[in-house]
Image (cartoon, rainbow, N blue to C red; front, side, top):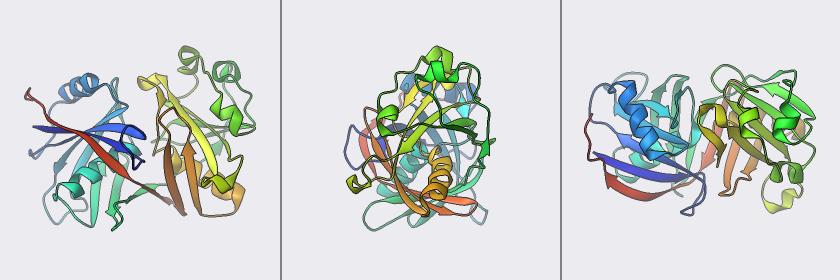
Length: 273
């Protein structure tokens, strides 16, 4: 079985967020325990598994995502990586619809090689900062918002871009502060550099201390910063060590996430299911 590693939300290898992608030829997923073992072996932020669905339905492929520790409800970068594999291998063209735990998602390929994901917009509600959040994160939040059921993160606004870039969290302490993770964000210091806001994502609770580029987080970052900046079209820079750009377009209860992807490894999984 072919297995590919794709760097998502970047146009350069060894940047962005790597995801493993396995396209299954079966009509159903293998046992979840087996999928989890493969994800642990890959040891990337996410491993995506997809199998084709019968024609005529509401989706073309079924899609699931696993961190090294658990299955998650929503993942942007591994969806982008899966769509990239489908399009670059000629398996699909145009718009591909995915059936996932968070509902129907889609990915549309463009002539320039970029892809646009159509995801549900995260419902943001003000939240009280959990006890110990500031100490665990290493910075004092200006505001804290809950991102809803499928994401399960806390969106934490910090004072400025430098504060986000210089965070050195206590990951063990941070793991108890949210259902999934913490998204730290601030406005861009200089929007002329090509981005409107910055972020970092920490998810020790699901086996990822820091995620290089978190697509799902941008379904919360988009409405947050669109309300602050007065524009529906924005660009976010996730300032992890690998970095990555996510172009966001707010469409009410849907958020469009656009980015590029690069396949860096194409191999064969030698063990069966």
